[in-house]
Amino acid sequence: MQVITAVGSIAALALENLRHWERLKEENQTLKAEVNLQHNMVGIGARMKEVFEFVRRVAATDPRC
Image 1 (cartoon, helix red, strand yellow):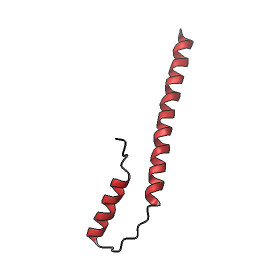
Image 2 (cartoon, one colour; image 1 turned 90 degrees about the horizontal axis):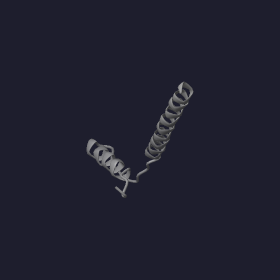
Image 3 (cartoon, rainbow, N blue to C red; image 1 turned 180 degrees about the vertical axis):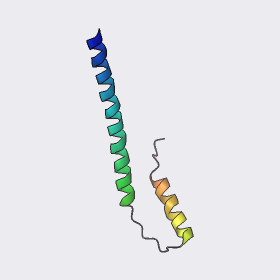
Image 4 (cartoon, helix red, strand yellow; image 1 turned 60 degrees about the horizontal axis):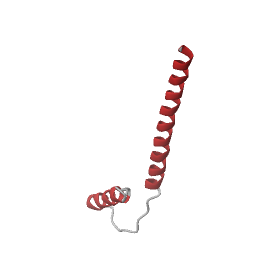
């Protein structure tokens, strides 16, 4: 019984680590996409930075939701 409990604990930990790894992989892809975000708009003022930030947030939205 102790062996089964130990194996179950190890399996649960492995699955939890896999879920964390997948989440980090997705986050890494999102961050890479944000870094590569390019635009052709002109302007560097505070209001334009707000527009760029808004576009960045909207672009990252999953349309299937």
